[in-house]
Length: 349
Ligand code: TYM
Image (cartoon, rainbow, N blue to C red; front, side):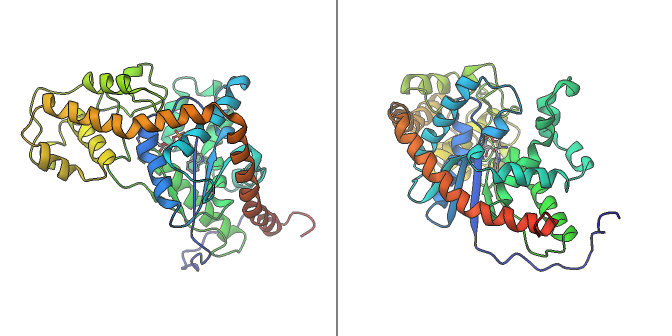
C-alpha cells in the first residue's frame, strides 16, 4: 500500500500550549550574529512562554568535530546562553544528545520528508560545496533533525536568524505531512519562525554581501562573544565602509551593504529601528559613526564576554544547569515521542 494522499481540505489547527524552542551548534566561537539573531530573542521570550534552548551537538557532528573539543564547546554555548541572560530557572538549557527523543523522532521524520524537499535546501549546497559525495549523510538530513528538535516539544515558535528560514519551512511541511499521513490533524503544530528585526541577518564586517559566520577564515569579519573591548573597537574601526556620509533615509541605505550592515548592528544593539539610527546619524560620516558604534558594542558585548569567561571557570556549575535542563526537556519530549510512535503503529500500539 502507498502512503495516503494529501488533502486540500482545511485541517484543524493545533490547539496546544505555546512553546519556544531554539538551538545553537557547538561548532566554534559564537559571534555578534548569533547574539543578535538568536540569543537576544531567547532572553526576551523566556518571560513570555515556556522555552527550550538546546546546544545542538548532534547537528555539530554532521561535519567532523574533535571529540575532546566538542564537550568543551557544548559547555561554552551553555555559558553563552547564561551570559547573554537566559535564566535556567525560566528556560531549559540542555544538550540535544541528552534527550534521546530528538534522534528517535528524526528517524521517523526521515521517513516522512521527501528527497525532493531536501534537494532544495540551500544550506546543504553551501556546506557540501563541490564535494557532495564526500559529505556525511547526516549533513544532508540535517534539516530533518532540526524539525525533530522543534516538534518533539510541539514548539509553536522558533527564534532564529534569517539563514534558518528555509529549515523552518521544511519543519512545517514535515508537520503537515505527518498529521495528514497518520490521520492526526493538529497533532504537530505548524511552527512560526521568529525572524524579524535588524539583527536577523548580520553581515561580515569585511564584506557586506556575506553573512557574519563562524567559518569565515578572517577573524576581522566578525565580533566574537569572547572578544575583549580592544578587539571589538578595533574590528569596528577596520570594518569595510564606503566614503559617503550616512544617508538620511532607509532607501538610500539599500545599495550600500556595508553601511546598511553597520546601521543594522547599531539598531539591534541599541534596541531601536534603522530609521531611528539614521535620524541621529544621517548626514554624518563614518568618522563619527564608527566610534559611537564601537562604544555601544563594547558596552553591550564586553560584559557578556566577561560573564562567559567567569562561567567557564566553573564547568561543574554549567553541567548542573545542563543536567537539570535535560531532565525538564525530557519530561516534555517523552510523551510526545511515545504518542508519535503509537500513531505510526509501533508495538505495542
Ligand atoms: P547556528 O549554530 O548556525 O546559529 C545559531 C543561531 O544564530 C543565527 N545566526 C545569525 N543570525 C543573524 N546573523 C547572522 N550572521 C547569523 N549567523 C547565525 C542562526 O540563524 C541561529 O538562529 N540549524 C541551526 C541550529 C538548530 C536549530 C534547531 C535552530 C538546530 N536545531 C532548532 C532552531 C531550532 C544552526 O545551524 O544555527
